[in-house]
Length: 258
Image (cartoon, rainbow, N blue to C red; front, side, top):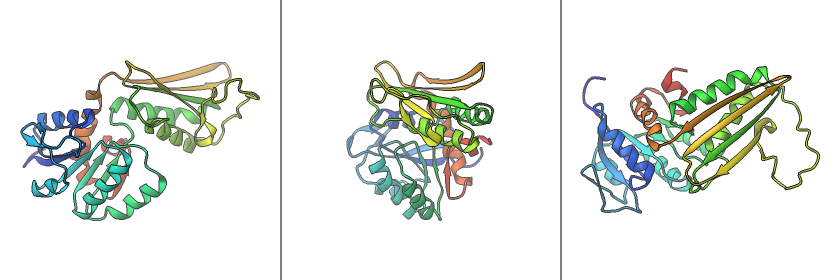
């Protein structure tokens, strides 16, 4: 990339993911961290930037791209602000509904928005490979494993994976289970009734297995993120690519050219 660095602001800058994003942006020569917003961390400093409670700090700093790793309720407000002020958005927050996506698609006309359930490039490839494999198998289950501070279940990555697999094949066998001795033992039903199991455990960060089966064979596709830095190459890439991806983009695939 040539020319002036892209000016980036971070929502949720005081949280673990937000702070890691700030580190990644500050370390990249093509990006410049110019604003940080987090009502829970007002007054703290990150790479010489004082964290503010007000998104106006983004406008005052001339932010071109805002990165949001918060929670759905806060992110909805943040994205409305971005759309209204012509700021591009890169979003790692999960928990949005179809109505939310429709609203974002309608709102982002003067700037762009990229929302990804997972920014780890290995996770993006895992979802792609699961989608590619789905037409060749008739049973599949997803097991996602996360740290015990994760609020939602199943993860956005698991839901996105199931949606892509369901869209890739309509030929899924029915679940043979007739009685759950412990209710919920078979997990939750995702798109196309693909079973999704959520594990919450200390010591983990973010992990997922997709197990596909057909007569006499299985295929297991597993992705592991052992540290939050695993998401940063994807976030940095998205900050650079979102300027050229019009409107609303879901997933990192387009940024990767997949």
